[in-house]
View 1 (cartoon, helix red, strand yellow):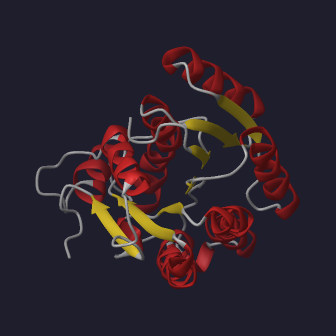
View 2 (cartoon, rainbow, N blue to C red):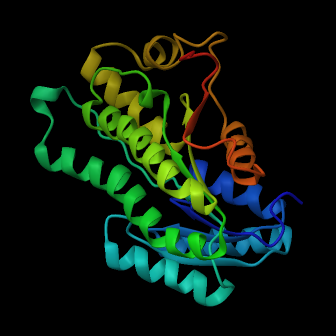
Length: 260
């Protein structure tokens, strides 16, 4: 049990990648807080995970762009379980548009959820990690932390920004036992990606099949989607790593979509 009795918070955990990570952590003995905007979905996920693995779970209604909501959620976890050992900042959305048509309000919304969310959740958990002298913070980046695609100016900017934030926290937290890393998935067929397929087909003037085969998977070595299970394994690896030897890093899990 690689995470036995570790206290973990996963944002955006009621579905998709976050839910898969929450399941993986619970299967390894962790206590898992499911943080999500959707209260009913978060509670359902928490109940299902508790029934499946017998571990303690908690549902948190959390808007990661609200400092009060983040602080209240972290405080509730600490009150219940005493500390926070692992944070996975996973909450995210996608909006696609050419830059000349990209609404400034959408730009600000994208950066708020991805970057402000990572900052606020990290800021809230770090004092507890410093107090105990250990902790792991994981940001959900993307191949777009390393590369760019058309129509995704805000998303690409936010995902690039997560690298800088993670490296800074790694520098500050290293002497106090806190490591920070970024997971960079390729395209995973989550509801977020499913929504993009018709949107990109319309904007690019191509078929949905071409969006999948050329835009999403054309750069992979095997034209395969990355799976939620793939990313959950990476999240477990980072969370359970035993030392600060692995900090300030990013790991691409993309079927070769980006190589470095």
